[in-house]
Image 1 (cartoon, rainbow, N blue to C red):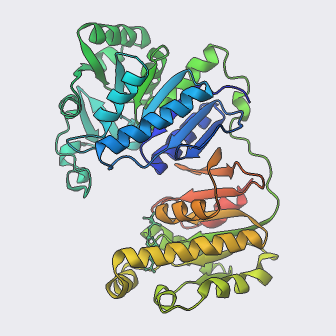
Image 2 (image 1 turned 90 degrees about the vertical axis):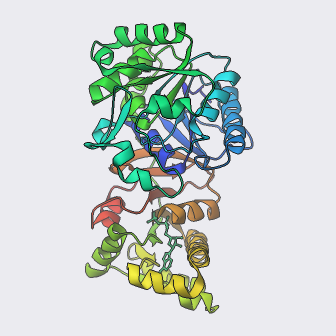
Amino acid sequence: MSQPILGCIADDFTGGTDLASMLVRGGMRTLLVIGVPAGPIDSDADAIVIALKTRTLPAAQAVEQSLAALAWLEAAGCRQYFFKYCSTFDSTAQGNIGPVADALLDALDTPFALACPAFPENQRSLFNGHLFVGDTLLSESGMRHHPLTPMTDANLVRVLQQQTPRKVGLVRQATVSQGAAAVRQALADTQASGCGYAIVDAISNTDLMVIGEAASEQRLITGGSGVALGLPGNYKRAGLLADAACAAALPAVEGLAAVLSGSCSVATNGQVAHWRDSGKPSFALDPLRLAEGHDLVTEALGWAQPLLAQGPVLVYASAPPDAVKAVQARLGVEAAGAIVERALAQIAVGLLELGVRTFVVAGGETSGAVVKALGVEALRIGPSIAPGVPWTLSQSQAPVALALKSGNFGGPGFFTQALELAP
Ligand code: ADP
């Protein structure tokens, strides 16, 4: 096993996937690990991303899990660390960005880190310390009404300062526009002035590249996936990335293919309709019949078995908003979700037993349930199917190819498009 260069801790799963795809794009072979593994993992990856689910946990738990992830990454031999949070700086007044970053700095015995959630390409720009979502200040965007992490202040110096006893400084875009040497100097000056953090502006990909380059000697970098854009370049210049051209390559996977859909988003409902309209085989799971105790898992598998040899099949619970509301009114929101997730997870296991080795899964929670049921602990990240959705390969004895898509990703033909690109 070669030693990874970059060790990343992501505060949620899709954030981890997003960061991992970015690193692959930059030429790093990247492994996405789900939760902190019990022991070492044999891998030749240049970057390891541990995806946690700590964004909205009580701060003490978020800190504990993030420190466990850091300890694992240190043991794996990483030389630089990245704490990935949301590009809209999603956090409560208590955290968890400040407390987790503080704990990571302490554990790394490091006095200072930069903080840059910006990702201008995705409409998240940071100017004079203020975060914009498109043309709108964060505090005036939809994020002000977020159910768990309402963001009511766009001044990130102030927001982060509320979450940490360390002083928070600012490196303005006027400095970033002068290039990496200027940013490096500004970071050193901010640290010398007694700050533990610097919020760093970025209004373009060029700014992110500059910040990445300036961060080459920083032990810990904190931010969104955008600021990772410039990191692979540092490792290439240092001669650490041997095989950059093949970073996204995945070995071929033999076997059958299937699509599982538990997302009820507009995009996914469109994708299910597109699949059915093109005459491909599909099986609809009715949550009310599941709740009445009908064994739809066995029924779906029995239906799928003879069809699989001819091509991929779709099993879906996806339904339009009215139908979902009616089911939720009968069963309760959580119970309805859980019963569907359990059935789709059991069907995934059954399909695996029938020889399926390539899965397209629609739905964030649904993907979580399927990955868990299949016993997947780590995923090698492959080429992108659509922005934010890569093909992945499970790191297990019998590798399984997985495309995990959360709700609103992808165009109408996504399922077919994904299968055409499957490893
Ligand atoms: P998304 O990424 O679109 O949010 P998720 O999988 O995260 O998708 O969430 C969708 C939730 O809706 C899951 O808990 C799933 O089990 C549930 N669900 C799926 N189909 C139905 C349905 N027909 N009625 C009620 N709930 C459903």
